[in-house]
Image 1 (cartoon, rainbow, N blue to C red):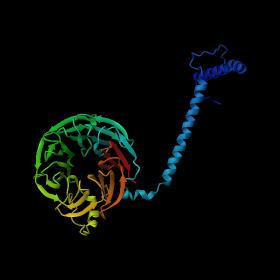
Image 2: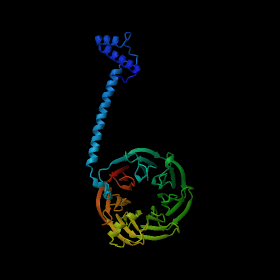
Image 3: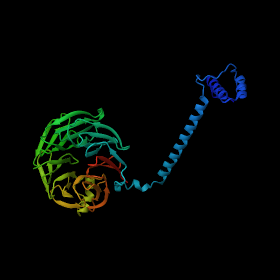
Length: 413
C-alpha cells in the first residue's frame, strides 16, 4: 500500500510515536519500533517539536470532531425549522406587524432617545439623544458600533439621505451637522442659520436639499452640497416641531406648537393649507404614502379609486391631545383615531400601506388598521414615554426609542 505521507512526514510521525512510547514506559515496543524505523540513536528530548505531539494532535482531533458534531446537529435543527416554516407567511407579509417581546434592547445613551432611523441599504440604525450624541448600531445583532460627537446640546433629530451616503442631525445648539457615512462618519458640514433650537431635519427625496424646522418658528431649505440656506418659510405662530417631505418632493408638511399642521409648496414657499382641529400642540405630521391610498379610500367610503394616485393627497397628524387625525390635503378632516392615553409622539405607515403605527407617552405602540381606522394591537413597549418610532424598509423590523434611554427592535411577523 502506498503511503500518502512524504519521507519527512513519516520520519516526524515515527519520532512522535517513539516519544509517546518512551514517555509512557512501553520499553519493548519502543525498542522494537526504534530498530524497525532505523532510529537506533533516538533519545527522547522535551525540546524537540515531536515532543508530546501525538497527545496534542489527538486532543485537537477530538475537539474538532465534537465541534463538527455540534454544527451538524445545529444544521439539522435549522433544516427542520426551514422545512416546518409555514410557506404562507411569504404571501401575507402585508400583514406582518411588530410582535412582543422585543428582538433587541440596545442601551448606551445617557439621556432620553429623541429619534431612531434606519439606513436605506445597510443593517444600520442611527439614534439621537438628549445626551448630545448620535449612536450607530448594527440592528441585526443589536451591537453598538460608534458614537458621533460634535453637538453641544440635545440632538433632536437624525436622517439619512436617500442613498445612505450622509447622515444629517440637528440640535438644540442651533446647528445642523452632516456626517459622511462612508468616511468613518466624519462631520463634513455644520449649517448655521436658525435662531433657536432645531427640532427636525430631513432630506428631500432627490437628496440634494436638506429641510429643517425650528423653535424659531421657521422652516429652512439648504443646498446639501454647499450647505447654503436657499429658502426660509415662515407662517407658524410657534415652535415648528416636525417637517417631512411628500414622496415627489414638491410639498412639505409641518407640525407646530400653534396647534396646526401646514402644507407648503416648496417651489413658491407658500403655505397651501392649514390643518386646524387638534386641541393641543402637534408633535408630528406625515404624508400618507401612495400605497396606503386604497385602504384610506375604503375607510372613508371613497369608491373613486381610479383617480390620479398623486403623492401628498392625505395627511396624518399626531397631537398632545392624545388623538391622531387623518385629513385630505384640502384640509378636510376624514377620521380621528382615539385610543392613546397620552401625547402622540411618532407616526409611521407600514410599508404595505395597510397599517399606521403610533408611538406615545402612554409607553405603548399602537397599530391602527387604515381600512377601519381602528386600533388592532397595542404593545407595551417601554418603561417610560415612547418618543420615536421607525420602520425598516429592507427588513421586517420596527425600532422605538424612549425616555427610558433604551432603543428596542421589534420583529414583524
